[in-house]
Image (cartoon, rainbow, N blue to C red):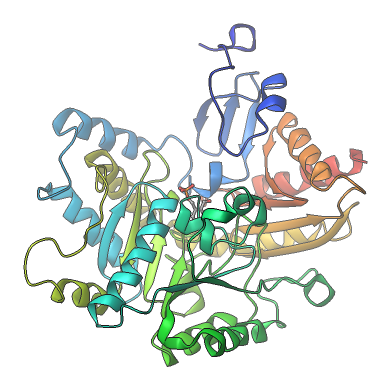
Length: 441
Ligand SMILES: Cc1ncc(COP(=O)(O)O)c(C=O)c1O
């Protein structure tokens, strides 16, 4: 077993979204995971306050998933996904469709959130072209949006550091809605802010500027996670839906983190009662035990694309590992756990306790905002003068050493624990953050 004393050579691995040089000087390696806890190579237990990366919704090491994957690996390790299939890919598609809002029951499998996003954008373009409106190629994202790291995803995404290195090579014809965050109006809101619905009206401005006949789709996260937890104002998503519908523009909800119970419902779409035309997902779909993702598409959109092709392949897109047998085994086992353990309801039941515990930090040192919805909380810190992000980075590192995993983006801490979390574990996470904040300059 790897211990702190026999660490491997760290030089070859180029780590993603990581300060490689700093990490390798002070590595934080994980050795095991079970239930709500990681065990670090250094030996201590770490309470998982982030579901890994917003993905281990049913908790770690679920035996049902382990067994499903290993059974599948020995029975049918791989089946080509083009012009061939395997039964579980169809079963998994039905199981996912059952959790989607009514009408979004055509499922395309991918391996990640980034692939789901790029797939959804291509479906939007294919749909308009199939209907004879091939000039609708514009895609509208939102400032501070995160849609993965493919060229499509970073083009519609709105997180500047993810874009600037590649700015000359982003997709053309993309525009962005403004984000909805304003602490002068919304600080310390519990649940959805009452102020900010009007930000959706910006879509009218964008439509007037470019003309609706050039716009294919609007893509937003119904609740923005990676940028540091931005909760949609009341009425905002409803308005986006109304405006997109008025102009025949497809609405895509990127539910890569909100899908599968995060807000206490199967999807954020169901939670907010707003149905888009396409939903992207990944992460919680397989409890992250195996990479998997999917796109749920409204039946009319799917049917239009199929109908436009006289015969043969209707949509020239797909992945070698779409509906990989081990992914579909993991998806079926994961969705079974969500149902048997009623985990979405559990998340809903726990959300008040979670909200109350989070908001105890409102007056903690350095905290300028606490916001929350479902089992997601964002705690925004005042940035250190001249060193944005440094304060939250220090909180993250100190919490880890004290046995609690949190995430940070800039100076915002994000908490999104597995849906199996117990009440005292919720208290422990926020108590630890409060204790650590007292020790951070
Ligand atoms: C909303 C959203 N979309 C897409 C992605 C990208 O997913 P992946 O890292 O699996 O490609 C993420 C990842 O955090 C996400 O939060």
